[in-house]
Length: 106
Ligand SMILES: [Zn+2]
Ligand SMILES: [Zn+2]
Image (cartoon, helix red, strand yellow):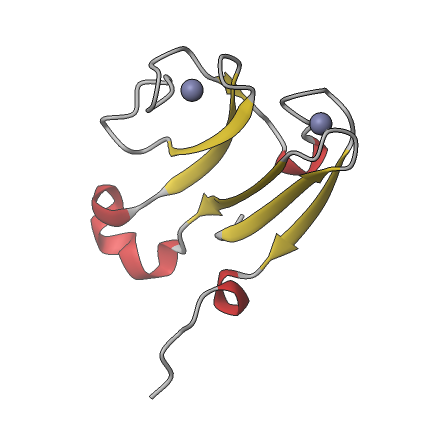
């Protein structure tokens, strides 16, 4: 899965989140696999009742929330994710990072 911005919106409680998820394109880093390879996964912080994304290849990431240190619950498929606050169905949009960020075309 390539890097994509996922936009989550809950119609029941109004929760909103926009997170960068997926893995960086390997083509550029094949020669040096461990260096820049990032793989952002979706997690739920139960303490804060919100989504958190984390790079699972980041050595400083030990499976806990960066802001409160509690153990995060992994979400297998972001497209199937339920609202971390109320458990309702979410409206999920996938946005290409190219469209979301201002790439400086010269
Ligand atoms: Zn909700
Ligand atoms: Zn947290």
